[in-house]
Structure formats: structure tokens, C-alpha cells
Length: 187
Image 1 (tube, rainbow, N blue to C red):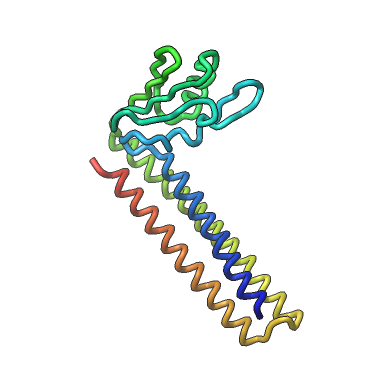
Image 2 (tube, rainbow, N blue to C red):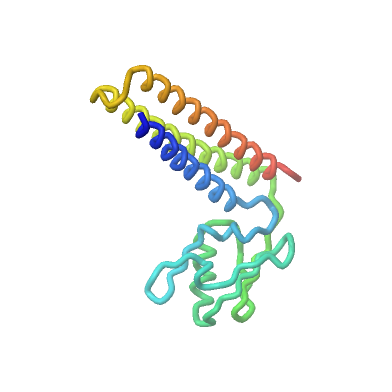
């Protein structure tokens, strides 16, 4: 019985990890405002290795419409510029020595719709991840019940708690999505 309760906390931790991943992915969606998180998916090939952009440069937002990328090693400016272009973020770096300026163009209606679709895709991936963790938890409860390590009543109570947790976190995913959707549609 105590093991099932411990497992519930572990399931919640793993489910919350899915929500954190969703928030990080949504943070990378361009909404017309500059954010250093827009460059989170950018991976640069330098010194024979692939590294996140924040390990080869300082990323900042000097104003609401610009991202500045200060590359630490001037010889790697070309690699950073190439990585940003290949990330398909719709950003065109302007090179000024070791500094890259990324002007954030205003979003048109078609691009906003595309971003909303991408946001929905990310949210669905998070929902699927939460449901898979729920299934694993339910399978474990069935096994504990079958092996006689848990009473049938405890199995039903724990199953109800797992379902309640799943429903709560799916609702949280929907709220995160709604917030991002409103942010994207803002004019």
C-alpha cells in the first residue's frame, strides 16, 4: 500500500515533466515579441561537437523587436548564423562582427494560424505523454493487485487517484495551450 502512494508522487513528477517540456517548446514559438527562448531549439556545430546556442554565445533582447546574439569566439560567427538560419525559425541574422542581430518581423494572419497549429501539436504530444504515464501507473497497480501486494479496495482507490491526477494535469495542459494561443493571436 505504501509503495502505491510513493508511485503516485513519482507519476505526478513524471507527468509534470511533460508539462515542463510543453512550456519550454511553447516558449520557443515566435509570437511577434523578442524572447531569448526563441533560440532554445538552435544547436550549433562548433569544434566538432553540437552545442546549444547558449553554450557558444550570449543571447539577449535589447528591445521588444530584436534578439542579440554575442558570439564568444569570433571564428564561430558563421556557424552560429548558419545554425539560426537552418533552425527554420523565420529569423534572418544580420552579422555585425561577433554580434548577430535578429529582427523579429511582425506576424501575419497566416503565420499566426500556423503557430497555433504547432502549439496544438505540442500540447497533444504532452497529453499523450501524460496518458502513457497514467497507463504505466495503472499497469503497475494491476500487477500489485494481482500479486497480492495490494488489496482490491486500495487498487480501486489508487486507480481513482491516478485518474484524478491525469485529468487535473490534462486540464493544466489545456490552460497552458489556451494562454499561448491568446498570446499568438494578440495583435
